[in-house]
Length: 331
Image 1 (cartoon, rainbow, N blue to C red):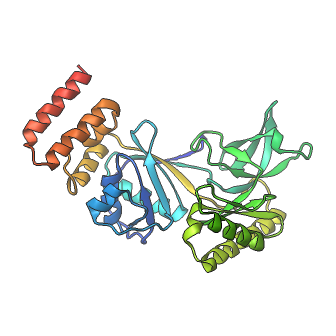
Image 2 (tube, one colour):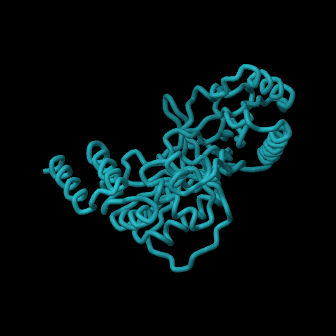
Image 3 (cartoon, one colour):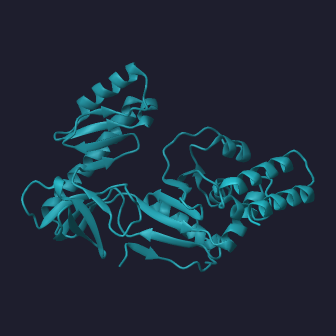
C-alpha cells in the first residue's frame, strides 16, 4: 500500500443529491469549480472578489467544510475537508468530468491514532497506523524509553506522502479554537486589536480544560462569546472521547477522526469540460485551463487576451494574437 486510495475516472450516470455544504475555492480552476459546486448544492464561502462579482455572491465569512486550491504543478487541485464534504465533492467530479483522476489519502489529516511502533533508525520511529500506512515520528518527541505503542497525530505537513509526518503534541481542531495538550492559552497573531486579544486570552484561561490550552483562531474575533463557549464544550467532548478510547483501543486504530485529503488531476478532457463551465459565466478562450496550467508568460498572455474579450474585442482577432504569443514562447 502507498497511502492512497485509487479511483478511476469512469463517468457515473446517477447524480446524487448533495447536502448544502460550504466550500472555499482558490486558484486557476476557481471559476469553473465554483459553477460546478453551486450547481451541485454547495455554498461558496470566503469568495474572492472576482468570484463574488461573477456569481453575484454575498459576503460570507463562515468556515468552510471544504478547502480547494491548486496543486503545485497546476495540473489539478488539492482538497482538504470533512469526510462528508470530500466524499460529495469526489462523487461530483467523477459524475461531471470524464477522465478526472482522484486519489484519497488513506490517513486522516489531524487524526489521532494509537499506533504500533514497527521499527526505528537513528532519527525516527516508524509507526503503523493501520490500513497499510506507516507514519514517521521524530525520536525527540518520545521520552519514555522504548514504547511498543504510541498516541500520535497526523500533521498537516507534506500531505499525500507515503509516510505521514506524526507528532505526539496533540491538538483538537475547531472552526474558531484549537485545544492543544500541555499547552498555554494563545491568540492568533492575525488578530491585531489589543483589546480583543486581551478579551480572548482571558476567555481562554477561563475555559481551558485541565491539561489543555486554548488557541483562538483568527475567525474567533468576530464570534459572540456564546459561540466560542459552545465550540470549546464540543471540543472538550472530543477530548473525553479520546481519553475513553485511549484506555480501551488496541493499536493500530483511529481514535479521533480529522479531515480527509484528496489529490485531483485534470487530464485533457477534464480541462476542456472545465473550460465550458467557465465559459458560461466569463469570457474564456478555447484551451483556457490548459494554457493557465502552463503558468508564466503563457498564463499572463491568456489573462490579457480574455480582458480584451471582456472589452468587446473581436474574438477571432484576439485568438490569433494569443496564438502568436504562444508560438513565440513555444516555437
